[in-house]
Amino acid sequence: MLLYILELVGIAVFAASGALVGVTKRLDIFGVCVVGVFTALGGGIVRDVLLGIHPPTSLGSWPNLGTSFGLSLLVFFLHSTVGKLRREILVLDALGMGLFASTGAVIALDHGASPLASCLIGGTAAIGGGILRDVLVNEVPLLLQRDFYAVPALLGSALVVAVSEWGSGTDVALVVGTVFASALRLVALWRNWGLPGPRVVE
Image (cartoon, rainbow, N blue to C red; front, top):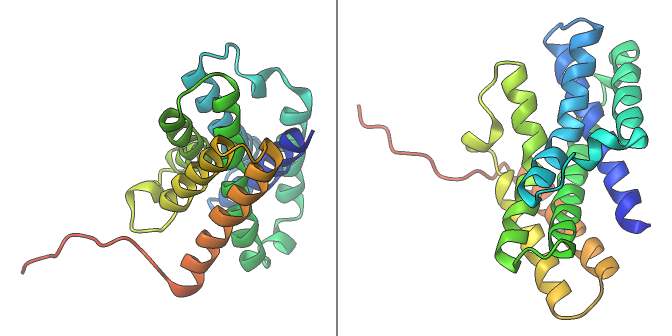
């Protein structure tokens, strides 16, 4: 139940952030909903494809589709209000990233993936929706920029796997991994951390 609730919260958060990007790109209502839904469900779809789950659970779950579509519509009609909540959206996006990293790793473990594969699948689930969002709006994905985003996701999913392997239980692993990944992302935003880029020689 905790796994399901956390995944639904992550879907809602990513749908709102994706739809807000669509609004800033001045897309129509259909475009905003498409960006919101793909942002919300993209990571889960990639996760399920990697695990051989066909069809992906997100495409066959009405709560997942309904939540992502409903939040996208809400953002479209209330974007003037939501747009003022940029700081809050960044916090929610960090929380969504942590949630997807943790739930992705746990689902991978439940389906018999190795610890290493579970770490990578959890990280991929966390960043997959954001990559699809950026591709849809013709932006360079954050993954390929200096933004400190993928590293917290990978570390959070690795922590989930480690806690699970130590026998502390799935619920504990989910909470610990989510809090760590989200907190690290928020600290990176606060301190303006980024990975080093190449030195440009004139």
